[in-house]
Image (cartoon, rainbow, N blue to C red; front, side, top):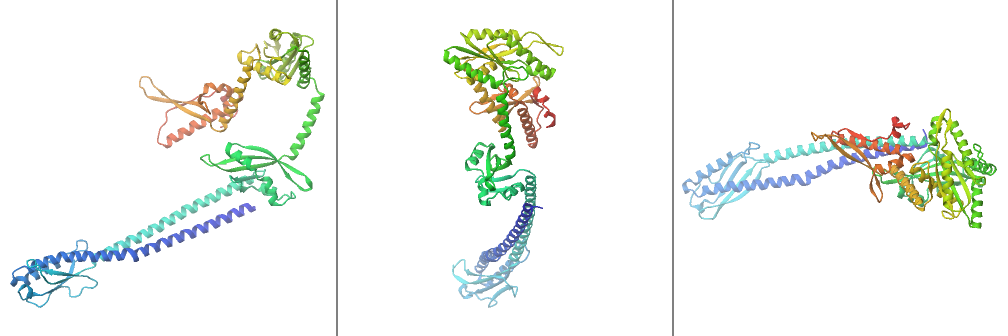
Length: 606
């Protein structure tokens, strides 16, 4: 167990204990709040409300007694007794107990010109514990004078029942709250454990990476590093840790570039060692995003390329030396690219000095790859040798014929008077190369596509002439092959547009710059939906949605058809899953797949 794993486990344990204390404190606080609410707020309010209800009830009953006082003087005592009896018989429907337990009357009978049978009127329970006592003045209804006081003793049974019911509900509320808090603690504790396990697994995964790996925040603060990164910082490079951090942290400009452009950036860093030596490290900074494509940090990996670069430098030096020595193509014995470039620059200098015209013919064998694939590379080499001999026979003895690479040849024509001279030679070459060739028993009709550039019309130096002739040759290939094309400046614009399109297409593949439209398919007679067709569109910046027919041929040429096709299949499957998750049953979906995708070696493995 390394130090990183121990540290992560200690952090997880601390988080778990801290979370437990938080939930215990929350539970205690919640119960204290419930108790305080009952003691200082709810119970006093209930008692006050009960007293108010008792007073209201007493006033209503006092009205009954007041009517009895308005009876005939000799019947007043009898009426009062009957009224009190009737009041005492009224019961609370909730508790089925008497609403009034005792009634006491204090009446000045002299004010109503009568004499009671008893000096004090009182009925009901002799003793009423914890009753609500309400004293209500009694007025004579006819004379409108105060004649006495009625004292009512209302029972607390309904209040005690209400308090008991509320206490029980508060108890259950507290219990449910405790259960909810306990459940929340279990859920969060489980989540934190899983999160801690995921973090530990992540650390184990990045520790398995052999190269040093760092994860920085968007503010360039170190968040995570693997074991190789720790060893790099303690590998005895001869500088302290603070100074070492300056060399591994990506620069501010690089961080902003990675985050803004949302694509990886590479650079070479030199990390000092002892004795003035340096380790050359290849740094790759890649954006780190969340599920919503919001940048959350930068992942930086280092690879020690010191020995690799030393070997590479040595190979480059040897390669340069070999290029200086080797001026002939070993297969055709024609001048190679290095020698031809030298001859071309000399010819341009002569033409410029003598104010003459020269032509550069760029040739490419048509469908040469098919010969290699079907008959083998030996047959391809034979065809190249035969083509080289035919080219030498088709031009003047002083003209230069060179093989640049693969199936590409160039011919340098000096001292021509007009462009028609170059086109005449090009036509003669096409006819010469077109003669039948027998390879491995197969009769072939080879052909070439030729691009022509002229000095000084199409360029003042050899490099530009070669580039423009190459551009014209590709135009000839796109036309119909087995023809020639003179260079025109508009061709460069077309080539640049093609390159821009390729670049934007590659960015679209990397950044999900495509959308899928679903075209419904209906049965004509029943008008029933029988399926949909997934149609690919490129959301090209500044040009809107572009039909697949306008870019798939180019994608085939540059090898992007397969990743685009995989993107389509993946997104169609995701859409089907989303429809099914929404309880929708999608119809059969047709997806267009090119032959090159099916023939791709990884098509059935994904």
